[in-house]
Image 1 (cartoon, rainbow, N blue to C red):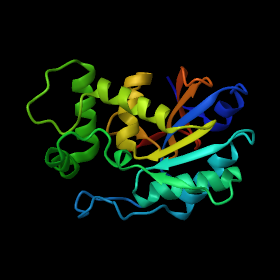
Image 2: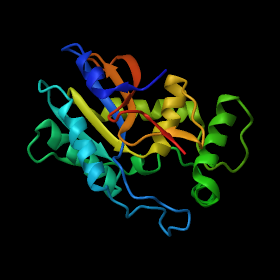
Image 3: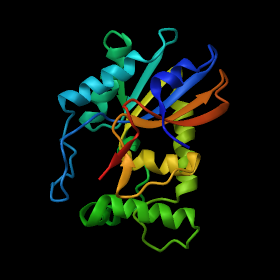
Image 4: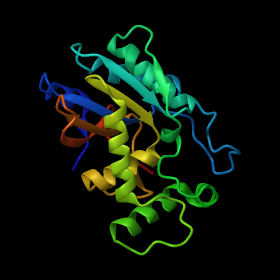
Length: 223
């Protein structure tokens, strides 16, 4: 599958369809492995705010919105600006702790991955999971399939209106795109900012389709 521009995606929606959008935050400054809190304090750039505003303008005017995000400031700011771009007055963003580290199983092991090579560590985990390799006693990340399904269930449970925004981090969207959309990521070819996964459901929250989407010119970052 390939990333669909959000404008095209929203144009294709039927009037009775709901959207649960798992989206990466907008552009931020570079984070180095030596950063003491690995970028938890890093906010959006001015371009990142503009990106989120532009995405919001693509969302149809008919239908209420709800906003959820990782507690990390750049994710809250992304959800807020998506709402402002859509024309929502004073959007209320609900931070969810789980969106900060959804697939983490062992925090000590996860910290080692952050310091040793973030992209390489996640890609190796995804390769092992999709290949069905045995899991070790101490794993940084949870089982891919089960945790991805839990993420989907959480979004469907939390979202209660037509357009539901979940702003989070690339580390937790890439696994979902790997599981649900069978996409492949490498340390050299990663997902872009304002890119993610759109879940389309009917009024009873029965999932109809899941699509990779992007709010930018391309859903890919190349290093």
